[in-house]
Image (cartoon, rainbow, N blue to C red; front, side, top):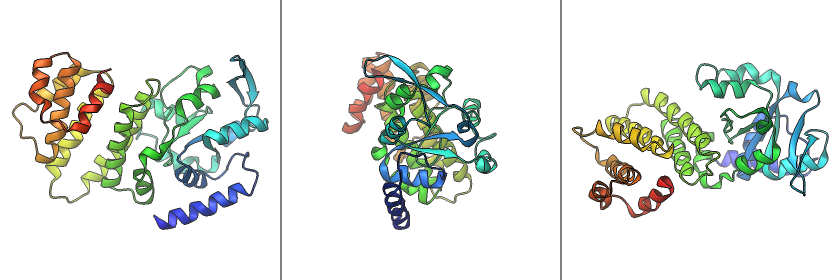
Amino acid sequence: MKKILLLTLLCVVTINTSFSQEWLTSFELAKRLALSKNKMILAVWEDATYDSYPVAIRDSNGKFKVVELFNNDSIKELVWDYFVPVIIQESSYDKLAKEVVGKRSLNYEERFNDDNLKVMDPNGFILNASPQDYFMDQNLSFIIKNYALNTSSLNPELGIYFEDKNFSTAFRLGVKYQEAAIYANQNIKKDIINLSDIYLEEARVFFENTDLDNKDALTQKLDLLIVKKELLLGKPKKARRLLKKYKDLKIHDINASLFAFLNYTTFTYLKKIDEALLWRDQVQQIDLKKVQFIVN
């Protein structure tokens, strides 16, 4: 971790002593800088920058106007205010595609391959992978408003994963993103949940090759997090059906609190107050505060 911080500090000094309004051309540098600045990355493929690249933006009067993304200094500075912008070199496509093609959703693959603006977290995973119409995809004001996230709440998990990718780091970051989705703007809640899924699915892959004493309990926790995801997506009936499968199963001690939270939240969501109250005393106080955010 210290090595990353030293390298990032060097990157920041270099950027601040150069023309910082220009887009970066090193994806690795962009990820390190995003990590240090608690920002998301705004990326575009190199070939898309050779021609005119118009984007829409609201002016001071609230009206939309079309501007050039790469030939307008004020727009470049605006982008740097909210993101770490990077032009991804075409020469890196094959390497990056190996981590995407056949491993991500169709929507994710399409966004990875298209020439539209991509918002990525500091590990390079795409956040705005949900399909939008072309205007919204290239609407810089919309992107800034919804996707210019401050990632400080995801530290230190982002940095630990960046340094060492394994079951534990992927799992913790996936859970952290899922927690962030509870409080997220409705416009991007599903996007954050999808990003959480990427890390949790990666954790499952690592999990298969780990030798842990409590694998049954961890498998159960991963499955219970799927139930939690359905609640965050506003599907309490589906969550209730999934929870019924645990009626005759042993709930491991490390999952007892999560199981109680899921039952209490689901019954509350479905307005079955009597059933919800049976679980309330088993839910931690900090988790009770989350219920209203989920239900509302």
